[in-house]
Length: 166
Image (cartoon, rainbow, N blue to C red; front, side):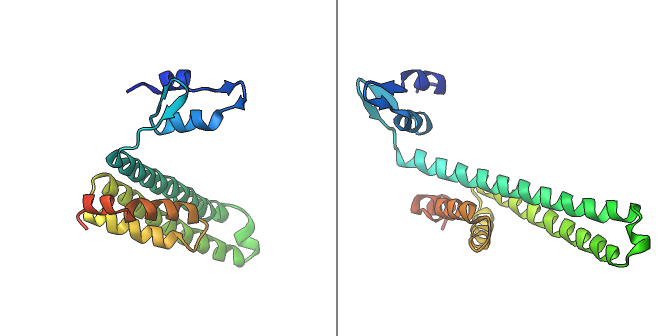
């Protein structure tokens, strides 16, 4: 198997007919090679399934990181506001402190769920599968829709369900 650098060197970047960037990217991402003028893409089912599961793990980590930032923002609101002059002037500032603390608790809980699901999917456990699917369904009606689609697609595929024992 050629390394990514070797595959980039073999992939056609500019041809006589114009740019051929898409085949080059497909070749690098999916482990293809260049055989004369045609691109041969390796698509063994087990390898593709592993890549989908890796994509699900990455999506869970990205969303978990976003929720961690969400929690840190809530923590900042809960900690910084009491040290300003705002609480002495306005009682609504204490509502902001409580809201910030609530955001922090919710953000930490969602971060823990995402990273637990990522570890479970990586270890190929049943609880990781169930938690990952639950989070995928939770993401569908939210701003995390693309992540929910990738996670759900990766976990719903038949070979991957068998990997997890379902």
